[in-house]
Amino acid sequence: MSAEVEEMLKRFQTYKNIAGIIIVDNDGIPIKTTLENTQTVHYAALMQSLVVKARQVVLDLDATNEFTLLRMRTLTHEVILAPSDDFYCIVIQKPSD
Amino acid sequence: MSAEIEDIIKRFQNYPNVVGIIIVDLFAIPIKTTMDYNLTVHYATLVSNLLSKASKMVHSLDMTNELTSLRLRTSKHEVVIVPEENFFIIVVQNPSE
Image 1 (cartoon, chains in turn blue, green):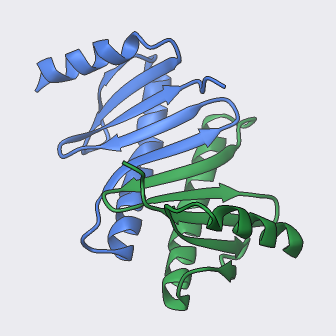
Image 2 (cartoon, rainbow over the protein chains, first blue to last red; image 1 turned 45 degrees about the horizontal axis):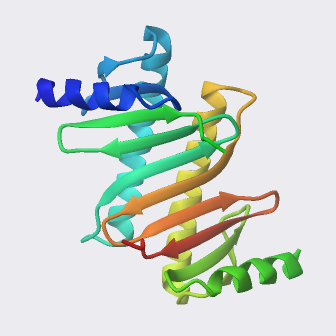
Image 3 (cartoon, rainbow over the protein chains, first blue to last red; image 1 turned 90 degrees about the vertical axis):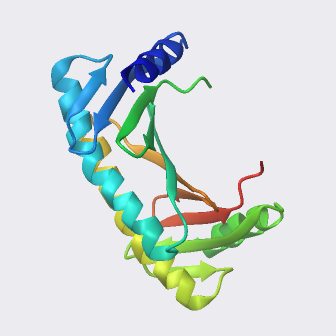
């Protein structure tokens, strides 16, 4: 699994707009990150509850549906949250418009 | 305000992929909708909850930043949520792929 993760990180880091990538396991602990420690932990902690909530919202609306992606657009960045079976991925990018 | 809302609904209803549009006020009460009532109320409460959580999170990471839109992608639909000054717009669409 970690070779797959390394490859994914390397691939995304080459995009100019990407400010940071954080990979968090199901317990909310960041396993890999390209940002500095305090920021990473801050993001991971906040996103943990948001992922859980988003998943609940989707299941509540339709039990056969699955939450696949969450994109948050703010004034300065765009944060993308991609859940997976054993972990979830947080990507922070500067929108290119 | 209601002319603005009518305008928004008219604009989005023309897109073939749009399943439904809900306009919700700041108390999570649906003001206008193109979907059936029970589903609308269900969406309104769940989505408003998620939106306020995401909004708080963005503020907590950076006080000057603000959430401008939220996209929740699931295996069946995509829900786009846009907070405006006095209301939220929720659009449910079929992703065009």
